Length: 595
Image 1 (cartoon, rainbow, N blue to C red):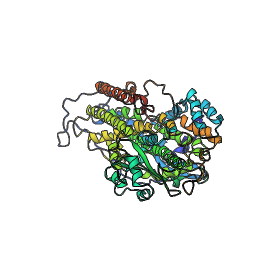
Image 2: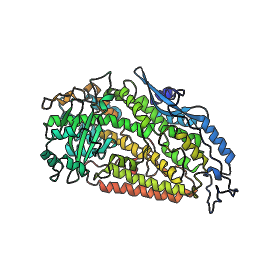
Image 3: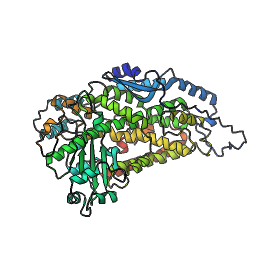
């Protein structure tokens, strides 16, 4: 069924080109290096070892055939603006691939076909059946529902725990970290409203005895906010009974290094909630923040690990020969990207899909978010993002720490690998294939370099792309997806109007996704809890199934040993943890955008 949908709609996803929204640049073609020349721009390579079939273009003995290959590839693909129409409105998204003719055009067709035979959760029908038929009259019944699913198919989702410590810890592991920022000068949010609604003594009780007021938290780098103050802007206008409110959550680092919720400001009713409110009020506030997070996180994942990479990959396929050392390495990690985006649009962002029915934004709101977010979405490095958001000081930030370890591992591996081929500083300058890639890619991504001045700059882009397609992607979309949502307090929409004041009677059965849609509300998240049956699928072993040339053997083995050590270190850290954070273990990470 997926194959049929994908095959039918692939043309819709890649329509004829619209006028470019960016100024056109002239594509530069860098000269082929002439090793016999003695001018000041070239040097004779010394002690250069050549691979059997991988060469920088300036050293390739079959240069004419290589030129023909790249010229054919240019004709196979082109970047066009992607249109997607839902409920009578057309949205303009990213630049993406249009198949033109021959050669590498078959890559997209093969990926679409492969996606059609992809194995999802094998228990999905059983899960949908059990969750749809289970009788729930009170919020306590949902615990029994998850225990029932635990017996057959799925673990109890982490988000089912709604106590304050679990709620705060989730921001450092499974959700919310992309929008988390340190509260500092110029970035206070609605902090004045928070100060008016929680006393200094209560702040001290939550955050530590030496914290006399909120200003002390700010000055000591211990106050953070999860700012989703824009969420209600994207709610589904045709279905206002479900929504994800605009919310800002405030969290503090406690004296014993816990990350605890301090206050939640729901902007839709302009009420500030804190842990000392009545239990039902505080639970509603946490439910509101969770709803906003789930909508934002799903679409942030789509922007920053899918759509932002697609036009760059098209430019790569237009410019880089299969004889280039980086071709097989990068395509190993970019595999599946074209069909994955196609599947996301067809199966998520269509009319009456499960996403459309149960998420507050629905398909129209999500598409409006993508339209607005994409043009200015930066391709910053992990370190740059952590600095911009002020996230270096948080203790026990497992998502950050695991990402940094993985980034460093790939940085080392790619540095060693590129060092086999870019021996002299001028090698990168005379590699016209990567230079043409840069010149083409920067047309579509504003902060992509338009030329590579050093091999280190090329390495930084490669690490960034692979990190987004593998580590970052699966921190959002993988079996972690099952754990971020749970009835009744962590759902992708609220389904009853917010109270206008605190202290009113709240029945949470009014706020949950209606029973008639429960199989969608559970099944959609369960679909991402999938088996990995390919023994070479994960980062722990995947390089054993790709030919990176005879020179790379020792470097690859060194990298795989590093992956094994990282895997073991995470296991050791999580020993005895009731909710272990294992999602970024190399043995749990597919080497491409698998889901």
